[in-house]
Image (cartoon, rainbow, N blue to C red; front, side):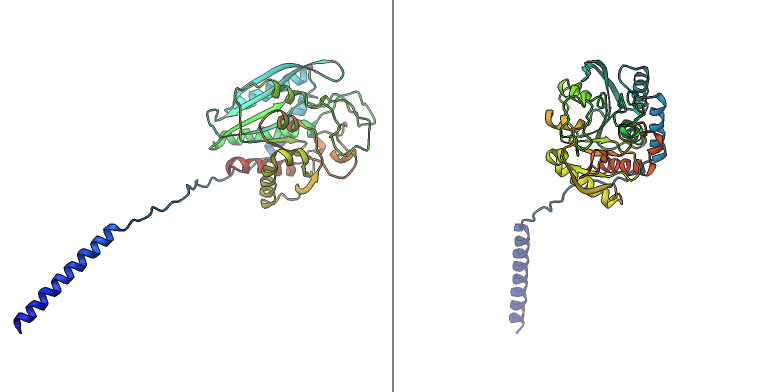
Length: 341
């Protein structure tokens, strides 16, 4: 009986050892697949756009007087704008050139270009024109005198100068380029009051951006995308989805408009379609590989006055510039930059 028990004990011990060895061997032969996780970038808080500061930048431009090429007011304002970009840490160059207006006049043009985080490979571009209309062709008085261009010109620049200031306070993870195009608004006069969009306009417009496309000042420049601002300061402005932007950068336009609506600015960034609007983005899209969308005040399906009754008149002054509109546009651009859309 004792031998049997001993045998059973030995047998049990042998069995247990064998099982344990087998179990260990099985565990050793199990291949554990590594868990693949996507790299998650830490959240970055978007700064708050200061509409009061942007409004002041608009006022400072208007205080120089009409920024018509070949005038002292124009040149003085250009120097100030370049100095502002430098002050905020942007590597800044001024691209100078000669362009011929539809009148035959040769215009001295200045495209002002600033780059932040110049060595960053991932870059985004923001632009606006800074010159003003040399005549008030849609007004009933003083038609041969230049306009203030508070909305048409200064508003986009004002927003972008505030963007530059914000970037200097909180460095984004990407490269940001700001371009102020010259001689955009020196185009041929149109007499049709029933024109619904700018698709019939010729290459007499946007001379500065055309020059920039033909004479690239930065070798191998290839930002991820661009956003153009034009007439972004009027009260209750409407920014539709124009056909040029949809054609060349529809995905980007939808993302920006959706973000604007999610942030509570859907009354500005509306889901309305507009025709092909000739603006600086038209030539950049057609002549380079940079997809660019246009944030521009325009009410579709109406008359020539859909750019606003003040458009190309002396009523385009500081009285029509609205801080809430500047805030809406500027906050969306900061969201684009810091959330890396």
